[in-house]
Length: 406
Image (cartoon, rainbow, N blue to C red; front, top):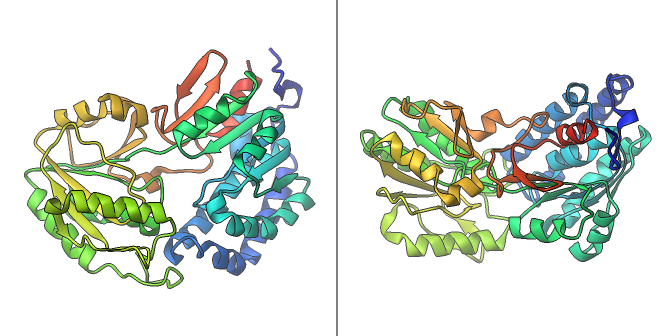
C-alpha cells in the first residue's frame, strides 16, 4: 500500500549515484578536519571530538549499505531537533545521510550550542548542497520550529521525553515521529569478570567527554565477591585521570558545558556524601566536577539520575536475580536502553525487559550509526505509529522503509 507520507514509487533499491557522492562528502570531512575539530572542542574534549569525527566518517561511509538494506521511501520534508552534544555526528546522522533520500531537511540546533552547530553546518552544508542535498539550519525557538514540523513528513526529536510528547501532539497523525531519549545504561561486573578489562570499560563508558553523553553509564553493579577490589581499582584510576583544558589531547575530564549538569552533580554528591569514596568536590565557578566515585549497598528502589558529569556510582549486588528484578521495575522498563555485562553467567540473555544486553562490551562498543540505536524503553527511544507509540531501537532509514512498505 502506498503511504501518503512517503512516495513508495521512489524507494531506493540500488546505490546508484551514492558511490560518487559519499566519497566526495567524506573527502570534505577529511579536508576540513582541523576546522571541524576546532568547532567540536568548544563543547567536547579533544579525545571525544576525535572519536566523534571518526564515528561520523564511518557512518557516512556506511550510508550506501544502510540505504540499500532499508530501502527508505522518498521523504518530501524532514524536520530535525539537533541534540546539544555530538554536533558533527548528529549532523551526519540526521542531516547528511537523510538528505540522500529526502527532498528537504530543516534542522533546529539546541539553543545551548547554536553557534557551534551553525559552524558545523557552514563547513559541511555547501558540500551537501553541491551534491543535490537540501539541508537548512535555523536557530529559531521551539515554538517557531513547530510550524516546520507540522508541515513535515517526518520529525526527529532528541531531548527530554516530556518535550517529545508536546511536539508529537502538534503533528499530523500520519507524520513519522522518532523520539531519541536516554537511559542509565548500567554496567554489571560479575564474579567471573576480567577486572582489568571491566574497570577500563567502566571508566571509558563513564568518562567519555567528561561524562556528557547519553551513552555514558550512570550506575555500575558490582558483585559482592569482587566489590572491594573493583572499588579500589576505580578509585586509584580516577586519582590518575588527567583534568584540564578540553582542547588538550591529554585531558580526559574538563569543565562541563552545561550548568545544570554541574548543579545536578553537586546536589547528588551533597545528598550522598557518606557514599563518596574518592573526589566529591564541585567548583560551580569553573563548571568543574572532580572525577568522583561513590559506592552504595544494594537498594532495589534506587534509580540513578542522568549525571552528564564524571561521577562513577557503584552498587553492590549478591545475585543476578536482583539485577533482573531491577531492570523489570516500572522505572527501568520505561527507560531501558543498554545493559553491559562482564563476567555474570546469570545474565546471559540478549535482552532483559526493555534493555539490550551487551556481553563484554559497553555502549560505545556497540553503537553504530548505520544500525538501529538504543533499547525498547519508550523513554529511551520511540516511534509513533497510527494507533500508538512503540519503544524500540531507532534508525530513520529503517523506519522510513517500514512506512513505505505499509
